[in-house]
Length: 106
Image (tube, rainbow, N blue to C red; front, side, top):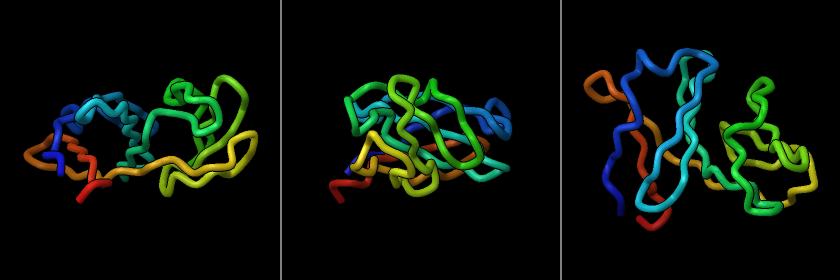
């Protein structure tokens, strides 16, 4: 089980913003979507490329390499060429900071 990792102060992640953080060796992208925070594995399941630099359209991130789309709320694939969902991580606000943790092995 990983501990909670500080991403950034909440004030530094406005609606529509994103931040990257390493959680125990796992690249994680954290998004503020209309005041709600979401975190996904920053790796496209299609070819292993990072996806956080892609366009955010509504609640979907578009992979900048081949155009696969993923829901940042659930990690679900919404458009090929990817067919496997990506991991999502719990996010919380604690003491004014956005925090994330990797709970996949709990």
